[in-house]
Length: 324
Image (cartoon, rainbow, N blue to C red; front, side, top):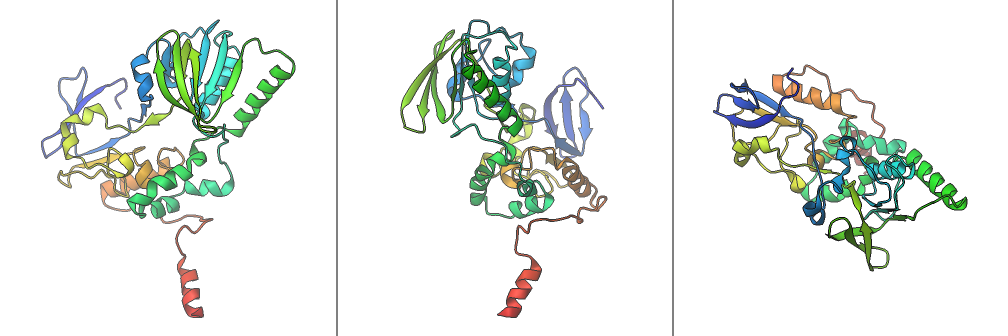
């Protein structure tokens, strides 16, 4: 185990992967490499030129000494992270702002889909069924299932609603607070303050908001890590804009020898489905990789308690044929 190490590059000579690490003279060598270095914060294109002390992704918030006193704050993004940031601002965690606008392009501030049968999306059986689908069908299905893995927890929504309702009913809001769903960020101009231009999806109008601080809770995206640049031309691109094409066992498709194997986790949302970025199938995912790596079934992955038949069950097909 090597902690606090920064990978600079991964190369190969056909016999092994050479993993170059900052501060080490000799690279580590391996015949198999599993990539698990995560996602990259997603910034709207119009916000990238403004990134800095007053415009930043929420993933940086714990490393900042925030002071929002007397400042107009805009929170962009209607998922769990956006809700938690808004909750903290309303609680005065970083001082009392002059105004708070919470903008989201989602049609409303929507709850995480936690019903029992939605959890069946996060099962090996569903991954198997999803993986076999035609590539063109997958993006729409992933979008349709968004709230199963990317909504706001009901407890957070209830707490936010209660706080806002009570403060307004009792006249305790000392500054303007606006919750603004259905707003798509079109442009961002100026610095300290910035002007945010949005499109209202409900009536199609264009709106403008001014902010001294913009907190971007706009999620993450899967990009090819910089350290793979030396072999990037040998890697096959995946479905739905994924930077890597993955086999069912999470092996990356590339033009190298079969003796050198490259795997990736949290990189197959559009090949393996919405369960891929989640931790719920971590053990099963790791077992699948180990079985493939060793070429034998070290872990038995055949046993499962299925609640949903994602494909036509053999028994049902047999019954239909018999009836015919």
